[in-house]
Length: 353
Image (cartoon, rainbow, N blue to C red; front, top):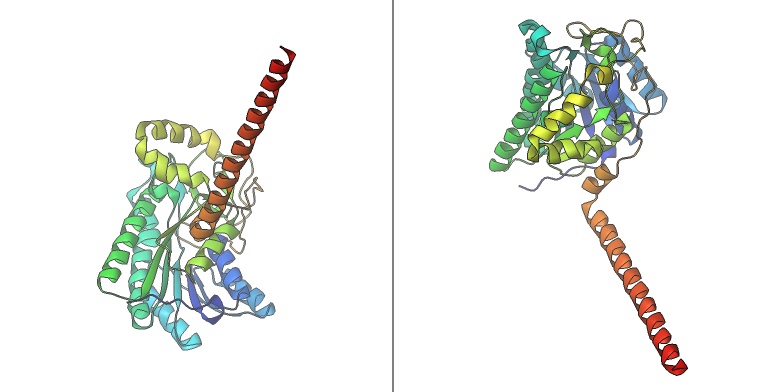
């Protein structure tokens, strides 16, 4: 069955993990484009503020505070969305928790919590969304990470969880295609993104945590999500820094190990900038939310040519082809000019003799 996705202005979009970071940026962007948005997270105060801000700009939004790790929370969220707006057209799973620590220092309880939210919560929500979307068509968008392909020291549980998310999402996509369901399933794999992630993470290091460079603006991920809501795509990688991790690293694993050992050294993942008050450690309980960006004000890239190439492959190929033709013609012209000059030199030399 052909997958037909509505324009964003005609959609109802559910966003799980919408109280900060990528989820909040996506809610704002989608609402600005005319979508009706349903925000979900644990922090009811941050959600209420986000809804008021969207409505004040003319958007339509509602929110529900849920812990997606709890059984039945996804059904509750779907019921709220349908009761408020009548249906769901796109469902985005972005909720996750994390911690900075060596694997040997992470308790099994902490490991389980990372998976309960980021994997089992996503599985529960994906299956609920898929059952709804296969009746009317739509998009399911799961937020993975380039770290699903290439782990980094000090973030082991998060890397393992995102690897599981990738495999689950790929399996669900194939099974829905086998069933001829009209559902687009996209995995978004961001590189390092400037969000509250380091502030929210439980931290067992000696200094405040940070993400290593290169970092990218969260608006780029929101752009990719909104694009996937209206265009069928299998995977979108956000940030050219993720290209090496997802393509080159598997081909050169030992070299990648050494590179990530350097990038993932404690010096590269710590800072002197402390978390904002009330934000640190949301592993088990919600903490202060409401910002897209982190508080460390790092240098971040606001464009990603690699993302643009994935979203618009035909235009990119045409542009690259035009550039190649131009380079060829320029080189040919240069060769002709050199040949003409050489011929003139020989004629002059013959005349002199």
